[in-house]
Image 1: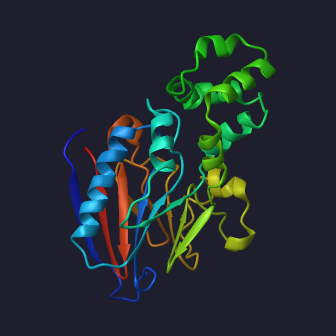
Image 2: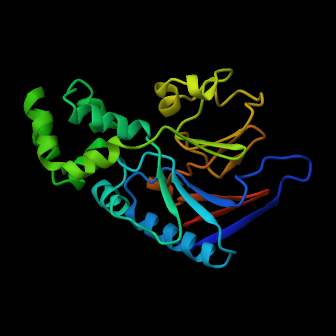
Length: 255
């Protein structure tokens, strides 16, 4: 799994910079994409990091895309569905990959070929689905084959993911936001799928957006957003961003 490491970003609020929620701490975890091995390693780091800090109300926020691409989507979902850490409250945000799987489970077979092409084949195999047989099936039969293998508790778990989580001067979301639109008026399609014009926009949003979805070689900190999807499924680097008051720091696997 590679070397586990921690990198401190230090204080960033001396000039009136962003602050986390008063009296609380948060960890944002980037796109896992079926890498249960990396998830387990990172959660151990988070637990150790919390143990070394003063007790505070703690949130562990997963930014979506738990599934697809990597080898064990089913294992990741089961791990987090049953995870009850004594040291923090888990928050789960929906990503575009969860959305696609849920649409298929809901009966939309038209997107099944694209799902298989963009990481769904690995997800299907983790649930014991014969992918080559699935490709040869008629639409209705293919949907039923997926439904038969994805346990109902997994589906219900994914269906209950939120879209955003506000933490002081930070907004956690999977993909980003549509610039110039109030949070409560954002379209779910943008929150889960957007790249441009969000990535290229340098204007202040009134908060710092912490997001995944777009892979970066290393965490990309900008005044109005922080990208933490470090491509875990192929890089071996799964990243968590810690926030407490004016402080930010990173935990990651591999690298």
